[in-house]
Length: 99
Image (cartoon, rainbow, N blue to C red; front, side, top):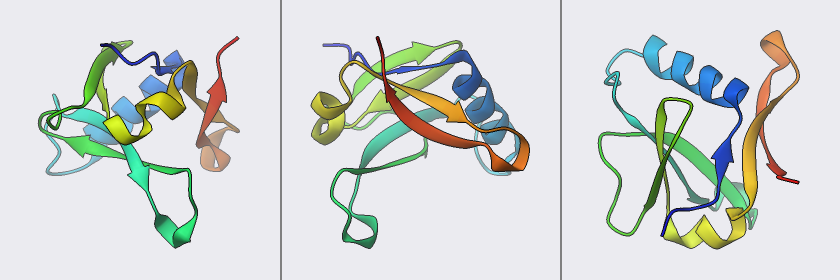
């Protein structure tokens, strides 16, 4: 089953550029979206790059950027999109509902 999480073109471009500028991250690395309990905040997600999706991950491609979604957050992110809010140094990734 393919996750219905999507990335906007702006978010995909921002993440592709970030991947390409980091030493040690292969140009074909996959963006992984997973759960995180950072600061004990439930519902927090983390993103990072992996060589290949983990077992059980749902996979997709957004504007040329391969991505995978961990099973523990796939249902929560169903029908959502990762987008960019702000511009320049103030730009940050956000999860928004898709209408």
